[in-house]
Length: 248
Image 1: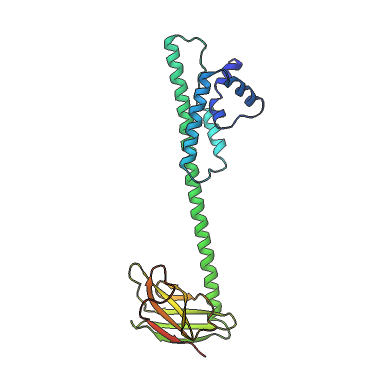
Image 2: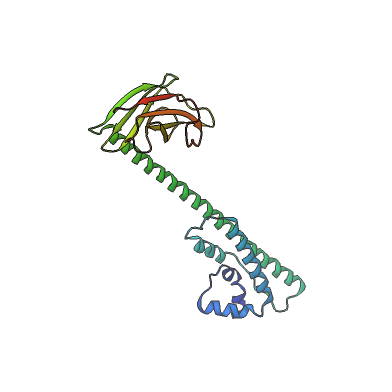
């Protein structure tokens, strides 16, 4: 294989910015007077640009090595200066097949990168949620076990048992319910601190169990529970299901 013949085989690597040093310099010079290679590079770069625009997630680190490895396994025939008609057709078909193979490799690598990035994001979200749940469980347990914890009990208008435990040293409160039915679709239970007649949200709950209430219970004189839209409200919009007076 002559030097020019070797340069004809570098279109795919050039389109992927995989050439460096003397090889990059030689192919760049070759590209100025080889219309066949220039046309093939334009097609491959356009395909690579479309694939890059189709995915918003970053490709994994090994993508470059994977594509380059596959390129090496795809045979490409360099254009002959004056091929016979039948030979020229064969050459064009082989070159198109090589370009298609490179584009297919790009598509496969992009798909793999998207899937790998999606899995990574899913794992990160799960890890973040687990860490948040662990921190909340630790804070909830600390309030219930606090030396100055004080608990009051009551029941909702629907008959569910409830209690609120407060700790002045931790400046936190925990709401617990038993027998509270799931809220209707599009609705959520919302807790409220009552500061001498001023209601402020203490967070949403979604059913039975214990919930670490949001905000300080320091100035609150009672706790209320209402049924609100799923995202919560800035102030109560329905008749309270519970009004539980806190210890003085």
